[in-house]
Length: 335
Length: 126
Length: 117
Image (cartoon, rainbow over all chains, first blue to last red; front, side, top):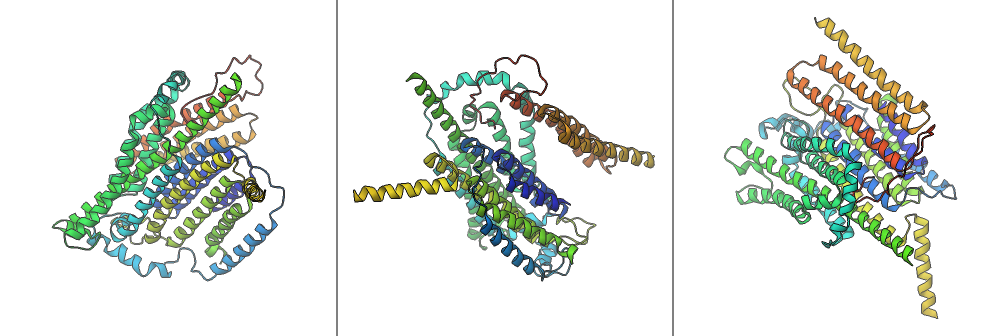
């Protein structure tokens, strides 16, 4: 079963010393858990986990280990105390699970209280077939607001730690490298030029179709960002910076959070509660649809732009390190 | 009872593997990967609790009577995205640590910190 | 007519899974990186294609059929490209095939500006 594969992959992650292989195994771990989530009928969650865990997370870790080194130093002592702590905690947790209701039983306590109300009343109150989207965007919109702010904060944090001011004369030094890259990566460039419009289109489809099938703002934002990241990986960071203006992307990420918050404020100003979409329009179903559309748009904007910001800052930092190394080597040769 | 609670026991095993990676390895990136493993095992735990035998995905359709519980799906969706946000922050901190200390092994960083402390103390006494 | 469709789709699914399994065995048993790459790419693309064709024969309405056609096109496009990129990256980083007796000409300096891990 899939769970056995997961355990095998996790044990392999412990044992291996080559960090590159470990990062790849983490990507496989994310993909296996996404397939397990599909088997468990959690299609929205599996979509997000596949896009985020097997896609963006693996990519970021690869960029980081290209900066920090590929091998882990072997430890000289055996971690017996850690094994003891882990075994005792594991034993206690297993003893705790003995009381739980069996897997899949329909009369477990969690299925009886709020969830049955969501399943039964979601169609009349909100009118959106995907129950996960209706709970995420309407019943629990406040939690999702907090989540969007967390993503935005992560983007700001990465900007604060890793951003480098760019002077315009750096651009033409690297221009000659780009020409040599042009023949090297010809096939991949052509294939990606064919594929990138479809990936962007798919991101828009997932964004707006999130009401009727698995999807929504997060998945769409991540897919959109991955198309832009693919472009910038293949065509060079400088060209990508000219195509996608950095201050504009930062502006878009702020606009996403602002859009989300202003939907809540608009519902207060129209007479309802915070994030109460029923008052946004005459008919409450239309109000719900409008509210969900706007906040998913806000979520998609913020997630996509924050992922792009994070990647560009990591790659820019790596570029700076490579440039410093080159100058250091050149100075050593001259002296 | 084995088949009924099998999922939860595997989740506990995965959680403990993640915890072991965080405690016992010195390399900072391995620790971050251990945290990611731990987080993913918690997601699997919640989603296993949400599954109902004979139910399908919680998307309303005309001919389905039994749905799986959508509430943990919502919580885990939030959790996955917050997890990637914290991982990105942690990785950027690792990059800065590497630039400041020159290595990402915990023991070497600790050594350099102790060295700096001792130098300061000797500098003050001399 | 129905039974012909079912049998042929079952045959396609079986061939597809057999190809994927044999690709996996090939990855384990081949001696060198480039041969393993070949095993993985060729068998995985063809195996996935066969499985998708088998599913296409069973699809009840046109929308599912169209989605499966698009997935098939994407797979045919992406599979060989990724294996090409991997093999190229291995070649430029100095990994030589096992029994190669050719003279390997000067590899260009690997300084790039794109972050191409």
